[in-house]
Length: 271
Image (cartoon, rainbow, N blue to C red):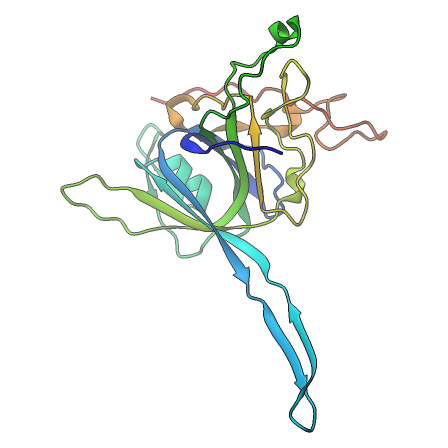
């Protein structure tokens, strides 16, 4: 049994995916930021339904009940500043460029993006009671862990829209709202987020995401990634991160999927 507190959001990573959760390669297809205020994940349920049939006398002769089901989750992400690349990553809006080709804003569009989405990963702090177990032998010195663990949340969102914008004598937040979907083609993911051995070597998820799952929550001693340079979106090239014999899903001769993801391309902040 895992018991851990969730205190403060420490980091957020967004990765562009298709409608099945498959990571999409591109020049600006992922970002890591701490420039966010909150992420709300609210379930939307299919209500239970009472089924009954009465006989000719008016008495109930058949009674049954269908249980409730989770349809999806509503996502509400509040940003503490305008991040044009994140807004574009979430809702597909066109970025406004200056004369040097640097992003300086966004332009809205009528159509809400639903063909693509983002994989959202969030790390939360909070010290658990078993973060510092008593060592049984000297193997603990081989551990890559800092001794701290994190709450890790993974979900997949699409149909993001920008909320109300109020310009006043106060801090203005920008809110993006969307809905979750199942992302089975995420598989074990392109990032190293959980330990793969007793030394806490960072690796991919141990088990793939299935077509029934919208949300993954777990504890991990693997530290969250640092924000991308300038908290901008960076290049993602899955084929160069996973090359033989380290495959994303598996190789042509039934080789297994890699336990550890390769490094992404170097990302450099624009002026």
